[in-house]
Length: 362
Image (cartoon, rainbow, N blue to C red; front, side, top):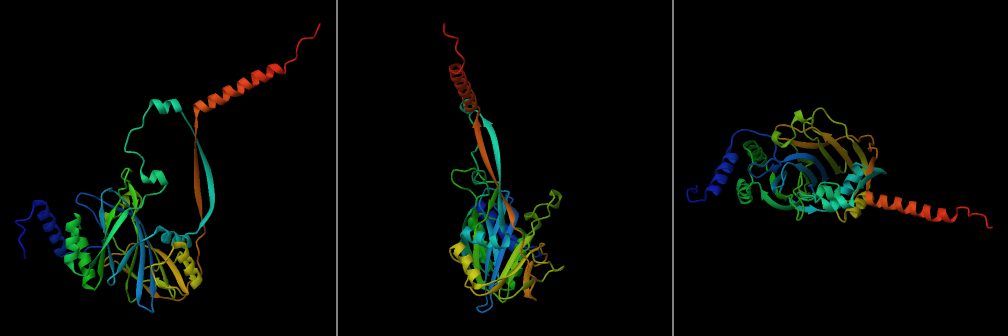
């Protein structure tokens, strides 16, 4: 083993801490987030689509997360059943999938009328860091991403954590070691939430990731460590896992109690192709008739791997369209209203005098 005496203090501190984490004997729960030391990242939402092709024994995971808690770069580690081919997909793919699972209804418009002052805006200057991306677009910004394949050996994960300045807890490291012992591989992603010219966002959407890998059936490593989820005292015990499975048959997760799907319906090859047209391409090769089944399940404990087995066809379930709220903000200057009032008074005074009855001619 190489000595760390000649290393810089910062590098030595990272190396010793990470080595302790990787060798910790306790069994923990799942890992997704690897923040920088002293930072805390909270998972707010996770949406997953599993596309399993039994003819080629491959699975494609399409996933996107939503985070809060830090504006500094952090790591995202995703376990897969085999060596994955990873790509950062367009959000058009996520929207095409979501439009099936959560159809949108009619637009409900509202008008927000506010009075402002030109003179007040000239006299008072706003100070601060400027608008965030969420305030500019009305939704959390999407972070940039740099994926890296780490394989199933511990050394690449160790080197990736050191080179990027990230940390994992002993419980997270032990969970990863258990998955690697069962032949699972790791894919790491550097998520950078900062955007040029904008203030650090309090909430950020992670990238849309597509990971294709060999698999013997639909499965997903779904657990998260307790410190990466909102506390129950805050009114929310953590986001449920929303996972949909597209394959040739209906599926049911191996969790108890067995949940009911919130979406279950068959998709023809034409409908799958239509999704590809909306998304400008699909990252999977499954193009024939199949069944799309979606669940919301609680976070599992232990190893945290949720597997989906073949089941009898479910009754057709399609959610009701969700109304879309669209607010229009109209700012009306007070000075403009005053000028309009003066203009109306002047017109009434000028033309009112012309129409007034004249005195009789003598």
